[in-house]
Image (cartoon, rainbow, N blue to C red; front, side, top):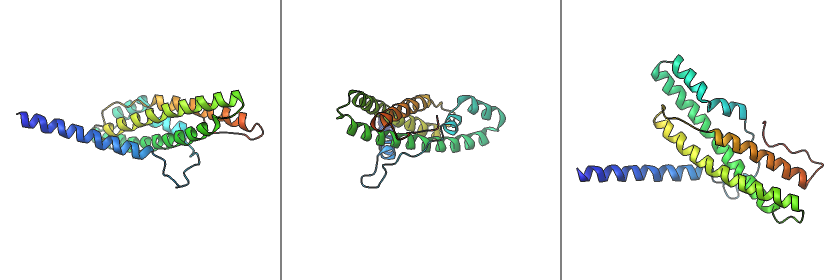
Length: 177
């Protein structure tokens, strides 16, 4: 009995480690790969994918097996959006870090806020990916991605502010919010 419990605990820890490595690799920027461009995010499509009302509607309308299949497809798409948001946040953190040494106090403050929001969004994206991977194994599990949507909106606003402060003549747009 003790051996079985030990094996179960070991398997759970191994699964958590594997998921942690997968999530961190999915959000990492490749060094020297040219991934310094913000990728567009269709926020409305992302919002639709993670909408609990939409999931409940699908659950009521589809047979259980079909719902699980559709749910997994939607979760994979949501994971792709979360990875893009996480990478965009990493790029914006880098931009914010380079702008923090500005002599303009407003620019330095906006850069500081951008870095803080970007780091928070990256942490939330990692947690959301972890929850998505759990929901892929158990499609009936809940998914809370609203912090990602809210964080991305805030991060986009701060990045646009920083862009306007650094170059007022250049229009800046990060997402389709």
